[in-house]
Every structure is written in C-alpha cells, then in structure tokens.
Image 1 (cartoon, rainbow, N blue to C red):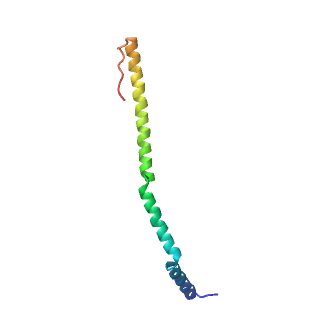
Image 2 (cartoon, rainbow, N blue to C red):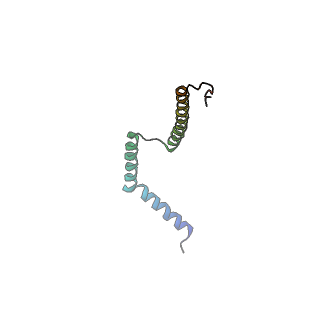
Image 3 (cartoon, one colour):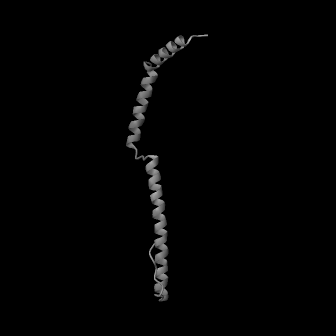
Length: 89
C-alpha cells in the first residue's frame, strides 16, 4: 500500500503536469473566446430576468384593471348612469 507521502508527491506531480500541459492553455483560450462571444451578445442575468418578469406581471395586472375601469366608464356614459362613480385601484 502506498504511503501518504507517495500519494501527495504523485498528486503534486500530476497537478504540475496538468498546469503546464497544452490542455490548460486550450481551456484558458476557450474560456477567453467564450467570454468574448458572450460579451457581444445581449444577455441578462437570471436575477435581472426574474425582476423584469415580475415587473411585467404587475404591469399586465394593472393594465387589465385599467381596461376594466375604462369599459365600466364607457358603459356608464352609454347608459347615462352617472350615479355610481368608479373608484381607482
């Protein structure tokens, strides 16, 4: 059974080998390339997307409420019923 010192030495040598190998350079270049591509795209973070989704949902709800209010006002005007005022939300 190998001793812990031999395993530590082997691990250190493998780490050194991977750090100086072309695979490390390829990974670094691929990350830089992908970062460059993503920076040119019009992307947003998940947090920004969630915030905008919530804002859109609230805006839609408000729009629906306003549409209902306008429809009620139009019915009142068409019927000549001014006795029941419409209260804003």
